[in-house]
Length: 262
Image (cartoon, rainbow, N blue to C red; front, side):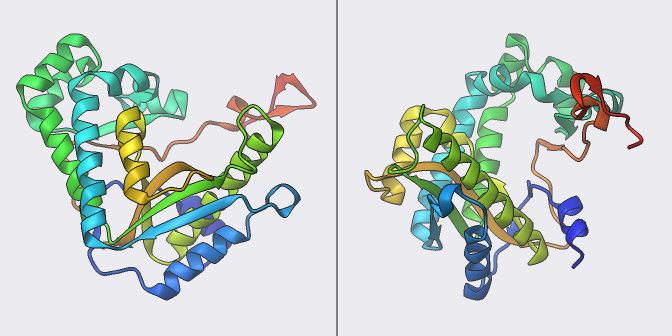
């Protein structure tokens, strides 16, 4: 597969995966791809945990679903992330970033732009949207054949120190290698972010994964082979737009935006 094709087609998989297990060969390739990432003095501070056990995946899925339900019911999700929501193609074209809510249940469509307001949150509560999204989230995670936790070695990851920055930089590079590799292998990947949003739930996640004191759990992902025809979640979004060059590149000085036709 062409290298630039892999980069340009990299994406997050919001829908369900094929239930078949991820082959051990592909798991090995993912981990070896991560190991090729750059790191400060070749410190390789990343650590990974791969979870296939059905009971443990179900427990993680339940935690993710409960976290999603609480985030929506309490309005925390919309309060934190409203700057990234786009509700029209025109807005997407102008901004070039954020996520476009292009999949909503019929009864919610008239209230799309109001979902971030207290009134909108109350309407969603009455319609049972938090429970619906919690159920969708739980089902997506439970149906993922592989869950991956990403950790950093605390000997390197020291927040406030340069080694802490270097560790996060290296982890990001390792994760991008994994993300690109999933596409090359016919797989998908998605961040399981909801438990991280609620501190007590994140502590439960740490306990579920048995993370030792010398490691810091940084993120959890779900992985699987991509279905040819995917069923989209009840509420879903797209995020394929990108900023124009003039919006994020400068030439010689930060006073001079780069031309879009570079």
